[in-house]
Amino acid sequence: MRFLKAFKKTIEFLNRMKVIDIWGDRNEGLSNDDKEYIGRKPTQNSYGLIGMIMGGIAFTFGDRYGFIPVIALIFCIVTFFTFDKEKEDNPWPFYVGIILSLIGLYLFITGQVHSLII
Image 1 (cartoon, rainbow, N blue to C red):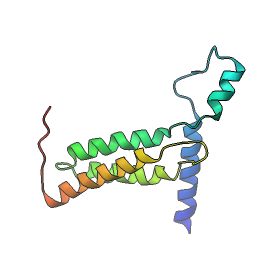
Image 2: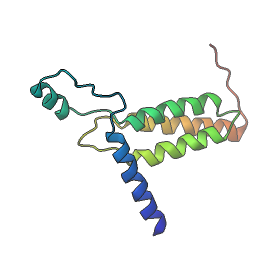
Image 3: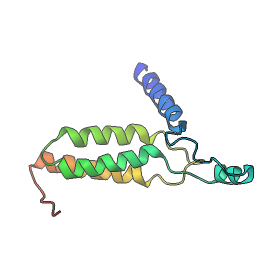
């Protein structure tokens, strides 16, 4: 029961942090009608994008360092619960991050390596 309360508090904290605009006032200079129009449109969950990037890093380096896919997988699963179907339009970055993390973890567990061509 304590775990569920702590998990709920964590999700509430992450939802509060999601509202903070780190880029400053990006709607500066727009009319009120434009601001209302932008406010009605669904947005992208920033945690999903971060999770997808972490999943890509987990896939890239997961065959050598097993802790990276584990951290990315935990991050993607925990932050998936911050997804709001009414305000946000796309849960797929979470799914992609989870899948890439699982592939990186599978590579580490089985001892397989992949060669990246850059």
